[in-house]
Image 1 (cartoon, helix red, strand yellow):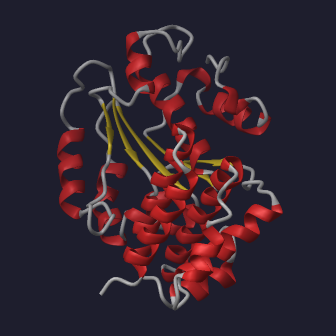
Image 2 (cartoon, rainbow, N blue to C red):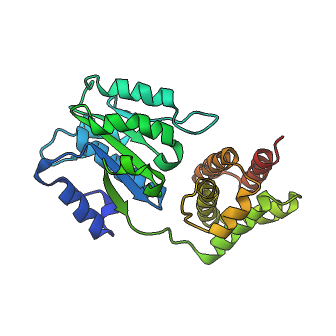
Length: 290
């Protein structure tokens, strides 16, 4: 297996050994759960595994062939990224039925079809997971299912028992002042007046600090969803419980989406004052909507 050039393996020898062991003797699992607190690392590993699956070079993934390039750019016709319903942000039963039907159809270009589910423990409801179960029990030949999650305990045991679980160690490391600011912003979102939120967001003058704070906020809002669904939190359980009294699951999903959108704008040299105003308006709109 070719691990050179994939920098996310460099500081995690255990992960490297796990992947090498998993694919020893050129074996290919049919279903893999990728569990990790840092979503970006889970995404990178998923991309690596999709590249390896479609690559036709002897030392996979080569990273240079057409199959690898398409997989890396998420443009491969045989790699399907499940998209949640816009309103509910979950994978619907109708979508799962379509995936089950699609899995039995021959691949277009590669020798395998791959189905990727992001935030699987939050977006795959128990009903949908049960409908997925038969496919995991009797998978079509040359199919790979990747389930990305922060906490695999949010998945049914019957699903987990039919998957290979890869855990990416390492909690996100943040500076204390960014943590404090993220908490201040989060609490400001549910404050009766918008001035507390504006005061917190006005501290976003430093791009690096703003980026890190938004990364923490994403996890805080996801913790709200975790609390509602009885799943372990990652950042601050007490804060998540406080927020969940005012923020519904649907609101939390919208907050995550807006926060991630704002974070993507930072490298584009967006005016930070305008970004703060945008966030204030969107957070208030989402939480205080009627």
